[in-house]
Length: 358
Ligand SMILES: [Zn+2]
Ligand SMILES: [Zn+2]
Image (cartoon, rainbow, N blue to C red; front, side, top):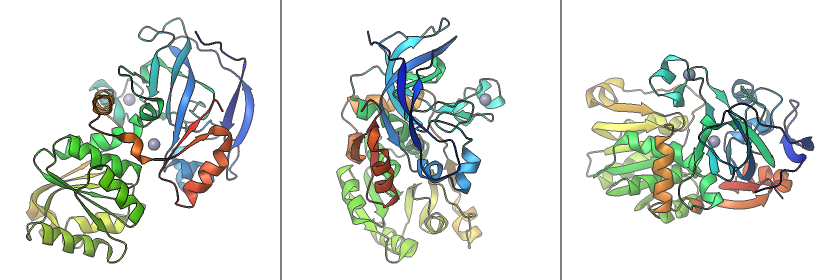
């Protein structure tokens, strides 16, 4: 069994200034249904940039003070007296949508979209987060790993889960799929689409390096949309599909122009899942032709189905149907967190994972 240190190194966001502080804090004690985990890996998400910089988005999604890091995996090293499901030594990954268990959504087993959701790593309902040697959370938010996947793969279950959730909603089996935007979640969506039976996956992005990664994740065709944007994607899709349009689109870019434009080349009767986060209103010029008369299905996802998505994603990784770690560009000690955020802000990084123990 692990010896638990009395003090731990942790990142904290206390003030509205850019950045985090690194400090030594007493290791907390779990009570009731809580477990203490030794965090083995924490991953940085695109949304963590908002928190780091403390911009207007951060003020909505987070509350000071808190330890950041909502994508985390670790080992249970201590537990409260009411913990039933988990044992010391279990490996877990954190479901950061801390559902209330009580609202309408929760009662119909949709904690993923709980209307009173707290969030780990955001100071919402908990000050704890994964950027810490140890962390505390209720056992009900722990996904217990059942396969022998690596710590890096385990920490990627959270972003991969968003991709998987979106692709499941898209019903891709036997279909040609377009994934717009090849950030880590878009790339994982490419791989999930292949794993879930898409016949062909087309990936669009503005960065050649990302398109190369998309090919590694299984994309059959890539489209560079840097010049021409959504119009160029439309031209390519119409050419590839002989003018029919594409039946399945996963919008993972969060670029308003790409989302607005995709309805014009979506096939009649098609499906779109939106998981990117546009900062502007949705604007479709030709609502009758591009939306209503197409008899479309538009889906959105927020997070993962608890724990269905986790089980499916872990299985896909364990069975080598998805090689999630391809998206990792940096694996750093947490002491280098400033470098990690610098490379993310400069656009050089894809997915960054950190080891909070070093
Ligand atoms: Zn995230
Ligand atoms: Zn709820």
